[in-house]
Amino acid sequence: MSSPRPFARNPLSRRTVLRGVGAALALPWLEGMSGAMRALARAEDAPAHPRRLAFLFMPNGAHMADWTPALEGRAFALPWILEPLAAHRDDLLVLSGLAQDQARAHGDGPGDHARSAAVFLTGAHPVKTGGANLRVGVSVDQVAARVVGAETRFASLELGVEGGRSNGECDSGYSCAYSNNISWRGPSTPSSKDVDPRVVFERLFLNGKPGETDAARERRIRRRKSILDFVGEDARALRDRLGVADRAKLDEYLAGVRELEARIEKTERLRVDPTGAAASFPAPTMTRDALREDRREHIRILCELLVLAFQTDTTRVATFMLGNGGSNLAYPQADVREGHHGLSHHGNDPDKIEKIRRINRFHIEQYAYLLSRLREVREGDGTLLDNSLIMIGSGIGDGNRHNHDDLPILLAGRGGGTVRPGRHVAYARSTPLNNLYLSMLDIAGAPTKSLGDGTGALPGLG
Image 1 (tube, rainbow, N blue to C red):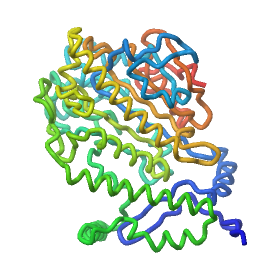
Image 2: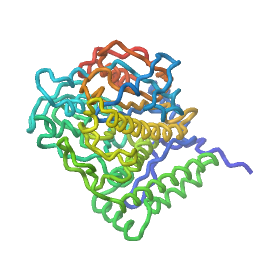
Image 3: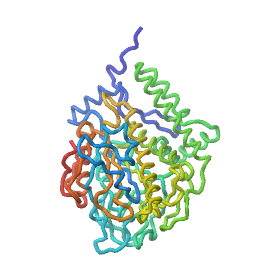
Image 4: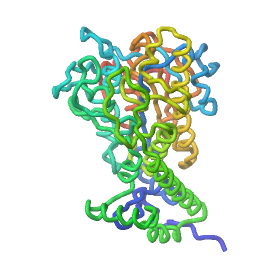
Protein backbone atom coordinates (compact mmCIF):
# COMPACT_ATOMS: atom_id res chain seq x y z
CA MET A 1 0.00 0.00 0.00
CA SER A 2 1.50 3.33 -1.01
CA SER A 3 2.10 6.06 1.51
CA PRO A 4 -0.46 8.89 1.57
CA ARG A 5 0.56 12.17 0.00
CA PRO A 6 1.84 14.26 2.93
CA PHE A 7 0.46 17.72 3.61
CA ALA A 8 -2.05 17.67 0.79
CA ARG A 9 -4.32 19.92 2.87
CA ASN A 10 -1.84 21.32 5.35
CA PRO A 11 1.54 21.85 3.72
CA LEU A 12 4.56 21.85 6.00
CA SER A 13 5.68 25.35 6.91
CA ARG A 14 9.22 26.43 5.96
CA ARG A 15 9.49 27.56 9.59
CA THR A 16 8.76 24.15 11.12
CA VAL A 17 11.22 23.51 13.96
CA LEU A 18 11.99 20.42 16.04
CA ARG A 19 11.93 21.45 19.68
CA GLY A 20 13.10 20.05 22.99
CA VAL A 21 14.23 21.38 26.34
CA GLY A 22 16.57 24.24 25.49
CA ALA A 23 16.91 23.13 21.86
CA ALA A 24 15.42 24.15 18.52
CA LEU A 25 16.44 22.40 15.31
CA ALA A 26 15.32 24.05 12.07
CA LEU A 27 14.56 21.79 9.12
CA PRO A 28 16.00 21.67 5.62
CA TRP A 29 13.79 22.13 2.58
CA LEU A 30 11.42 19.16 2.21
CA GLU A 31 9.03 18.24 -0.60
CA GLY A 32 6.15 18.75 1.85
CA MET A 33 7.04 22.44 1.96
CA SER A 34 7.01 23.00 -1.79
CA GLY A 35 3.31 23.78 -2.16
CA ALA A 36 3.35 26.36 0.60
CA MET A 37 6.57 27.91 -0.69
CA ARG A 38 5.27 28.18 -4.25
CA ALA A 39 2.06 29.81 -3.01
CA LEU A 40 4.05 32.27 -0.89
CA ALA A 41 6.38 33.06 -3.79
CA ARG A 42 3.42 33.73 -6.10
CA ALA A 43 1.75 35.93 -3.49
CA GLU A 44 4.90 37.97 -2.91
CA ASP A 45 6.27 37.77 -6.47
CA ALA A 46 9.44 36.28 -4.97
CA PRO A 47 11.78 33.41 -5.94
CA ALA A 48 10.58 29.95 -4.92
CA HIS A 49 13.78 29.50 -2.89
CA PRO A 50 15.68 32.15 -0.96
CA ARG A 51 18.95 33.45 -2.37
CA ARG A 52 21.95 33.35 -0.05
CA LEU A 53 25.13 35.41 0.03
CA ALA A 54 28.47 34.46 1.57
CA PHE A 55 31.71 36.42 1.54
CA LEU A 56 35.04 34.72 2.33
CA PHE A 57 38.15 36.78 3.06
CA MET A 58 41.72 35.62 2.43
CA PRO A 59 44.50 37.64 4.10
CA ASN A 60 47.73 38.84 2.47
CA GLY A 61 46.66 38.63 -1.17
CA ALA A 62 47.68 35.88 -3.60
CA HIS A 63 50.44 34.88 -6.00
CA MET A 64 48.57 36.24 -9.02
CA ALA A 65 50.74 34.53 -11.65
CA ASP A 66 49.26 31.20 -10.53
CA TRP A 67 45.76 32.60 -9.91
CA THR A 68 44.72 34.46 -13.08
CA PRO A 69 43.64 32.38 -16.11
CA ALA A 70 45.41 33.19 -19.37
CA LEU A 71 42.21 33.20 -21.43
CA GLU A 72 38.90 34.98 -20.95
CA GLY A 73 35.43 33.58 -21.47
CA ARG A 74 34.54 29.89 -21.30
CA ALA A 75 37.83 28.66 -22.75
CA PHE A 76 39.82 29.48 -19.63
CA ALA A 77 41.97 26.88 -17.87
CA LEU A 78 42.34 26.81 -14.10
CA PRO A 79 45.82 27.92 -12.96
CA TRP A 80 47.65 25.88 -10.34
CA ILE A 81 46.22 27.66 -7.29
CA LEU A 82 42.66 27.25 -8.61
CA GLU A 83 43.02 23.60 -9.70
CA PRO A 84 41.15 22.30 -6.60
CA LEU A 85 38.05 23.93 -8.15
CA ALA A 86 38.11 21.65 -11.21
CA ALA A 87 34.85 19.97 -10.19
CA HIS A 88 33.25 23.41 -9.86
CA ARG A 89 34.56 25.03 -13.02
CA ASP A 90 31.02 25.36 -14.38
CA ASP A 91 29.82 26.86 -11.07
CA LEU A 92 32.54 29.50 -11.07
CA LEU A 93 33.23 33.03 -12.26
CA VAL A 94 36.84 34.20 -12.13
CA LEU A 95 36.67 38.01 -12.00
CA SER A 96 39.82 39.97 -12.88
CA GLY A 97 40.57 43.69 -12.79
CA LEU A 98 38.52 44.58 -9.70
CA ALA A 99 39.95 46.98 -7.11
CA GLN A 100 39.36 48.51 -3.68
CA ASP A 101 40.73 52.00 -4.14
CA GLN A 102 39.89 53.02 -0.58
CA ALA A 103 42.33 50.41 0.75
CA ARG A 104 45.13 52.56 -0.68
CA ALA A 105 46.88 54.96 1.70
CA HIS A 106 45.38 58.21 0.41
CA GLY A 107 47.82 60.11 2.58
CA ASP A 108 47.54 57.87 5.65
CA GLY A 109 50.85 56.08 5.20
CA PRO A 110 51.40 52.38 6.00
CA GLY A 111 48.71 50.02 7.22
CA ASP A 112 47.66 48.17 4.06
CA HIS A 113 46.67 44.98 5.89
CA ALA A 114 44.28 46.70 8.29
CA ARG A 115 42.83 48.72 5.44
CA SER A 116 42.50 45.63 3.22
CA ALA A 117 40.20 43.98 5.76
CA ALA A 118 38.24 47.07 6.79
CA VAL A 119 37.61 48.10 3.17
CA PHE A 120 37.02 44.60 1.77
CA LEU A 121 33.22 44.63 2.11
CA THR A 122 32.67 48.35 2.70
CA GLY A 123 34.58 50.16 -0.02
CA ALA A 124 35.09 53.01 2.48
CA HIS A 125 38.40 54.42 3.71
CA PRO A 126 38.91 53.78 7.45
CA VAL A 127 39.83 56.62 9.80
CA LYS A 128 43.38 55.93 10.99
CA THR A 129 43.04 55.48 14.71
CA GLY A 130 44.07 53.07 17.41
CA GLY A 131 41.39 54.36 19.74
CA ALA A 132 37.62 54.32 19.99
CA ASN A 133 36.88 56.78 17.18
CA LEU A 134 36.51 54.08 14.54
CA ARG A 135 34.92 54.95 11.26
CA VAL A 136 34.77 53.05 8.00
CA GLY A 137 31.38 52.19 6.48
CA VAL A 138 28.54 49.67 6.43
CA SER A 139 29.54 46.38 4.81
CA VAL A 140 27.63 44.70 1.99
CA ASP A 141 26.62 41.73 4.15
CA GLN A 142 24.97 44.01 6.68
CA VAL A 143 23.18 45.98 3.97
CA ALA A 144 21.72 42.65 2.81
CA ALA A 145 21.00 41.55 6.38
CA ARG A 146 18.89 44.64 7.05
CA VAL A 147 16.53 43.58 4.27
CA VAL A 148 16.52 39.78 4.02
CA GLY A 149 17.52 39.17 7.64
CA ALA A 150 14.04 40.03 8.85
CA GLU A 151 12.83 36.70 7.45
CA THR A 152 15.36 34.48 9.25
CA ARG A 153 16.29 33.67 12.83
CA PHE A 154 19.69 35.34 12.43
CA ALA A 155 20.05 38.34 10.17
CA SER A 156 23.62 37.29 9.42
CA LEU A 157 26.36 34.92 10.53
CA GLU A 158 29.98 35.99 11.05
CA LEU A 159 32.65 33.28 11.15
CA GLY A 160 36.44 33.20 11.34
CA VAL A 161 39.40 30.97 12.17
CA GLU A 162 41.48 33.57 14.00
CA GLY A 163 40.31 35.50 17.03
CA GLY A 164 41.56 38.83 18.23
CA ARG A 165 40.70 41.93 20.17
CA SER A 166 38.96 44.99 18.79
CA ASN A 167 40.89 47.55 20.81
CA GLY A 168 44.49 48.76 20.60
CA GLU A 169 46.67 49.01 17.50
CA CYS A 170 47.45 46.09 15.20
CA ASP A 171 48.90 47.70 12.07
CA SER A 172 50.83 50.97 11.80
CA GLY A 173 48.43 53.06 13.87
CA TYR A 174 45.23 51.30 12.77
CA SER A 175 42.94 49.77 15.38
CA CYS A 176 42.79 45.99 15.69
CA ALA A 177 39.07 46.34 14.97
CA TYR A 178 39.96 47.10 11.37
CA SER A 179 42.33 44.14 11.02
CA ASN A 180 40.04 41.63 12.71
CA ASN A 181 36.64 42.37 11.14
CA ILE A 182 35.21 42.54 7.64
CA SER A 183 31.56 42.86 8.71
CA TRP A 184 30.40 46.30 9.89
CA ARG A 185 26.83 46.96 11.10
CA GLY A 186 27.56 50.69 11.14
CA PRO A 187 30.52 52.93 10.32
CA SER A 188 31.82 52.57 13.91
CA THR A 189 30.41 49.16 14.84
CA PRO A 190 32.05 45.91 13.68
CA SER A 191 30.10 42.65 13.77
CA SER A 192 32.36 40.39 15.80
CA LYS A 193 32.98 36.96 14.34
CA ASP A 194 32.73 33.55 16.03
CA VAL A 195 35.78 31.29 15.78
CA ASP A 196 34.74 28.46 18.10
CA PRO A 197 32.64 25.80 16.31
CA ARG A 198 30.93 24.86 19.58
CA VAL A 199 29.73 28.43 20.09
CA VAL A 200 28.36 28.55 16.55
CA PHE A 201 26.69 25.14 16.87
CA GLU A 202 24.92 26.13 20.05
CA ARG A 203 23.88 29.50 18.64
CA LEU A 204 22.23 27.68 15.75
CA PHE A 205 20.57 24.88 17.66
CA LEU A 206 19.98 25.95 21.25
CA ASN A 207 16.86 27.82 22.21
CA GLY A 208 15.06 28.93 25.33
CA LYS A 209 15.69 30.99 28.42
CA PRO A 210 19.37 31.31 29.44
CA GLY A 211 18.88 29.14 32.53
CA GLU A 212 17.08 26.47 30.56
CA THR A 213 19.73 26.50 27.86
CA ASP A 214 22.58 26.23 30.36
CA ALA A 215 20.85 23.40 32.19
CA ALA A 216 20.20 21.52 28.95
CA ARG A 217 23.86 21.89 27.95
CA GLU A 218 25.04 20.60 31.32
CA ARG A 219 22.74 17.59 31.13
CA ARG A 220 23.89 16.84 27.61
CA ILE A 221 27.55 16.95 28.57
CA ARG A 222 27.09 15.02 31.79
CA ARG A 223 25.08 12.25 30.15
CA ARG A 224 27.05 12.38 26.86
CA LYS A 225 23.85 13.10 24.96
CA SER A 226 23.44 14.61 21.53
CA ILE A 227 21.24 17.60 20.82
CA LEU A 228 19.15 15.13 18.79
CA ASP A 229 18.19 13.36 22.01
CA PHE A 230 16.46 16.54 23.12
CA VAL A 231 14.40 16.94 19.94
CA GLY A 232 13.85 13.21 19.37
CA GLU A 233 10.15 13.19 20.26
CA ASP A 234 9.38 15.99 17.83
CA ALA A 235 11.49 14.31 15.14
CA ARG A 236 9.64 10.99 15.50
CA ALA A 237 6.26 12.71 15.34
CA LEU A 238 7.24 14.62 12.22
CA ARG A 239 8.72 11.56 10.56
CA ASP A 240 5.39 9.73 10.87
CA ARG A 241 3.75 12.51 8.85
CA LEU A 242 6.24 12.52 5.99
CA GLY A 243 6.34 10.70 2.70
CA VAL A 244 9.09 8.25 1.84
CA ALA A 245 11.39 10.75 0.12
CA ASP A 246 11.09 13.32 2.89
CA ARG A 247 11.68 10.70 5.57
CA ALA A 248 14.94 9.77 3.90
CA LYS A 249 15.91 13.43 3.60
CA LEU A 250 15.09 14.08 7.26
CA ASP A 251 17.09 11.05 8.37
CA GLU A 252 20.05 12.16 6.26
CA TYR A 253 19.87 15.67 7.70
CA LEU A 254 19.70 14.49 11.32
CA ALA A 255 22.60 12.10 10.72
CA GLY A 256 24.60 15.00 9.30
CA VAL A 257 23.89 17.13 12.37
CA ARG A 258 25.02 14.33 14.66
CA GLU A 259 28.17 13.72 12.61
CA LEU A 260 29.04 17.41 12.81
CA GLU A 261 28.39 17.43 16.55
CA ALA A 262 30.79 14.49 16.92
CA ARG A 263 33.45 16.30 14.86
CA ILE A 264 33.17 19.32 17.13
CA GLU A 265 33.47 17.13 20.22
CA LYS A 266 36.60 15.54 18.76
CA THR A 267 38.27 18.89 18.08
CA GLU A 268 37.51 20.04 21.60
CA ARG A 269 39.78 17.29 22.87
CA LEU A 270 42.60 18.62 20.66
CA ARG A 271 42.68 22.25 21.79
CA VAL A 272 46.15 23.71 21.71
CA ASP A 273 47.82 27.09 21.48
CA PRO A 274 47.12 28.20 17.87
CA THR A 275 49.64 30.97 17.47
CA GLY A 276 52.08 28.99 15.33
CA ALA A 277 55.42 30.50 14.41
CA ALA A 278 56.59 33.66 16.12
CA ALA A 279 54.85 36.57 14.45
CA SER A 280 56.89 39.19 12.63
CA PHE A 281 53.64 41.15 12.27
CA PRO A 282 51.85 42.40 15.40
CA ALA A 283 49.08 39.88 15.97
CA PRO A 284 46.10 40.01 18.32
CA THR A 285 45.67 37.44 21.05
CA MET A 286 44.13 34.25 19.67
CA THR A 287 41.27 32.40 21.27
CA ARG A 288 42.46 29.17 22.84
CA ASP A 289 39.82 27.22 20.91
CA ALA A 290 41.38 27.80 17.50
CA LEU A 291 43.04 24.73 16.05
CA ARG A 292 46.68 24.79 15.07
CA GLU A 293 47.51 21.24 14.15
CA ASP A 294 44.31 20.69 12.18
CA ARG A 295 43.46 24.06 10.66
CA ARG A 296 41.78 22.24 7.76
CA GLU A 297 39.28 20.57 10.08
CA HIS A 298 38.63 23.83 11.90
CA ILE A 299 37.74 25.58 8.64
CA ARG A 300 35.67 22.67 7.36
CA ILE A 301 33.60 22.37 10.52
CA LEU A 302 32.78 26.05 10.22
CA CYS A 303 31.91 25.44 6.55
CA GLU A 304 29.53 22.68 7.62
CA LEU A 305 27.87 25.04 10.09
CA LEU A 306 27.49 27.66 7.36
CA VAL A 307 25.88 25.06 5.08
CA LEU A 308 23.46 24.05 7.83
CA ALA A 309 22.57 27.68 8.50
CA PHE A 310 21.77 28.20 4.80
CA GLN A 311 20.09 24.81 4.39
CA THR A 312 17.67 25.45 7.25
CA ASP A 313 17.11 29.10 6.31
CA THR A 314 18.45 30.11 9.71
CA THR A 315 20.27 32.89 7.90
CA ARG A 316 20.78 33.97 4.29
CA VAL A 317 23.89 36.10 4.77
CA ALA A 318 27.33 35.08 6.05
CA THR A 319 30.94 36.24 6.21
CA PHE A 320 33.95 34.03 6.85
CA MET A 321 37.46 35.32 7.58
CA LEU A 322 40.08 32.68 6.75
CA GLY A 323 42.53 34.87 8.65
CA ASN A 324 42.70 38.39 10.00
CA GLY A 325 44.19 41.27 8.02
CA GLY A 326 47.95 40.70 8.08
CA SER A 327 47.48 37.22 9.55
CA ASN A 328 50.71 35.43 10.44
CA LEU A 329 49.19 32.01 11.00
CA ALA A 330 51.25 29.00 9.94
CA TYR A 331 49.77 26.21 7.79
CA PRO A 332 51.34 22.90 8.81
CA GLN A 333 48.71 20.98 6.84
CA ALA A 334 50.04 22.68 3.71
CA ASP A 335 53.60 21.97 4.87
CA VAL A 336 54.13 25.64 5.70
CA ARG A 337 55.32 26.28 9.25
CA GLU A 338 56.44 29.87 8.81
CA GLY A 339 54.00 32.73 9.36
CA HIS A 340 51.80 33.73 6.42
CA HIS A 341 52.38 37.49 6.62
CA GLY A 342 56.15 37.14 6.82
CA LEU A 343 56.17 34.90 3.75
CA SER A 344 53.97 37.31 1.79
CA HIS A 345 56.87 39.80 1.82
CA HIS A 346 58.81 37.32 -0.27
CA GLY A 347 61.05 39.74 -2.15
CA ASN A 348 60.89 37.29 -5.10
CA ASP A 349 62.57 34.55 -3.05
CA PRO A 350 61.53 31.31 -4.85
CA ASP A 351 61.22 29.31 -1.62
CA LYS A 352 58.91 31.89 -0.04
CA ILE A 353 56.86 32.19 -3.22
CA GLU A 354 56.36 28.43 -3.29
CA LYS A 355 55.06 28.50 0.29
CA ILE A 356 52.70 31.39 -0.49
CA ARG A 357 51.38 29.36 -3.45
CA ARG A 358 50.69 26.44 -1.12
CA ILE A 359 48.85 28.66 1.37
CA ASN A 360 46.76 30.16 -1.44
CA ARG A 361 45.93 26.70 -2.76
CA PHE A 362 45.08 25.51 0.75
CA HIS A 363 42.50 28.29 1.07
CA ILE A 364 41.03 27.41 -2.33
CA GLU A 365 40.80 23.75 -1.29
CA GLN A 366 38.61 24.80 1.62
CA TYR A 367 36.51 27.00 -0.66
CA ALA A 368 36.05 24.01 -2.96
CA TYR A 369 34.96 21.93 0.03
CA LEU A 370 32.29 24.51 0.90
CA LEU A 371 31.02 24.59 -2.67
CA SER A 372 30.85 20.78 -2.78
CA ARG A 373 28.82 20.63 0.40
CA LEU A 374 26.42 23.31 -0.88
CA ARG A 375 26.03 21.45 -4.17
CA GLU A 376 25.20 18.20 -2.36
CA VAL A 377 22.12 19.74 -0.74
CA ARG A 378 19.11 19.38 -3.01
CA GLU A 379 16.59 22.22 -3.01
CA GLY A 380 13.63 21.74 -5.29
CA ASP A 381 14.87 21.11 -8.83
CA GLY A 382 18.33 22.51 -8.03
CA THR A 383 20.85 22.70 -5.23
CA LEU A 384 21.70 25.02 -2.40
CA LEU A 385 24.68 26.23 -4.43
CA ASP A 386 22.40 27.07 -7.36
CA ASN A 387 20.44 29.38 -5.07
CA SER A 388 23.53 31.04 -3.56
CA LEU A 389 26.36 33.39 -4.44
CA ILE A 390 29.58 32.46 -2.65
CA MET A 391 32.40 34.96 -3.09
CA ILE A 392 36.04 34.60 -2.00
CA GLY A 393 38.80 37.12 -2.34
CA SER A 394 41.28 39.47 -0.72
CA GLY A 395 41.62 43.22 -0.30
CA ILE A 396 45.26 42.92 -1.42
CA GLY A 397 46.37 41.76 -4.84
CA ASP A 398 50.03 40.71 -4.54
CA GLY A 399 51.09 40.51 -0.89
CA ASN A 400 54.63 41.49 -1.76
CA ARG A 401 53.51 44.69 -3.54
CA HIS A 402 50.59 45.57 -1.22
CA ASN A 403 48.58 46.70 -4.22
CA HIS A 404 44.80 46.99 -4.03
CA ASP A 405 43.93 46.57 -7.68
CA ASP A 406 43.75 43.39 -9.77
CA LEU A 407 42.40 41.62 -6.71
CA PRO A 408 41.98 37.81 -6.53
CA ILE A 409 38.18 37.45 -6.71
CA LEU A 410 36.01 34.38 -7.37
CA LEU A 411 32.22 34.08 -7.38
CA ALA A 412 30.44 30.72 -7.33
CA GLY A 413 26.79 29.77 -7.65
CA ARG A 414 23.94 30.83 -9.89
CA GLY A 415 22.00 33.19 -7.63
CA GLY A 416 18.73 31.40 -8.39
CA GLY A 417 19.42 31.50 -12.14
CA THR A 418 20.48 35.15 -12.36
CA VAL A 419 24.20 34.46 -12.85
CA ARG A 420 25.87 32.59 -15.72
CA PRO A 421 29.02 30.93 -14.30
CA GLY A 422 31.75 28.90 -15.99
CA ARG A 423 33.69 31.92 -17.28
CA HIS A 424 36.69 34.17 -16.69
CA VAL A 425 35.54 37.79 -16.95
CA ALA A 426 38.23 40.48 -17.14
CA TYR A 427 37.18 44.04 -16.35
CA ALA A 428 38.86 47.37 -17.02
CA ARG A 429 41.69 48.06 -14.61
CA SER A 430 40.53 49.38 -11.21
CA THR A 431 36.82 48.63 -11.71
CA PRO A 432 35.36 49.03 -8.18
CA LEU A 433 34.86 45.72 -6.38
CA ASN A 434 31.79 47.33 -4.80
CA ASN A 435 30.10 47.19 -8.20
CA LEU A 436 30.05 43.41 -7.76
CA TYR A 437 28.43 43.88 -4.35
CA LEU A 438 25.75 46.16 -5.77
CA SER A 439 24.88 43.41 -8.26
CA MET A 440 24.84 40.76 -5.53
CA LEU A 441 22.52 42.89 -3.38
CA ASP A 442 20.13 43.26 -6.27
CA ILE A 443 20.12 39.50 -6.87
CA ALA A 444 19.51 38.81 -3.16
CA GLY A 445 16.46 41.06 -3.09
CA ALA A 446 18.13 43.96 -1.31
CA PRO A 447 18.73 46.48 -4.12
CA THR A 448 20.89 49.43 -3.07
CA LYS A 449 21.71 52.59 -4.98
CA SER A 450 25.18 53.12 -3.51
CA LEU A 451 27.78 51.30 -1.43
CA GLY A 452 31.21 52.71 -0.66
CA ASP A 453 32.91 53.74 -3.88
CA GLY A 454 30.66 51.65 -6.09
CA THR A 455 29.55 53.31 -9.30
CA GLY A 456 26.82 50.90 -10.44
CA ALA A 457 26.00 47.27 -11.08
CA LEU A 458 28.80 45.09 -12.48
CA PRO A 459 28.03 43.98 -16.05
CA GLY A 460 28.73 40.54 -17.43
CA LEU A 461 27.48 38.35 -14.58
CA GLY A 462 24.31 37.09 -16.25
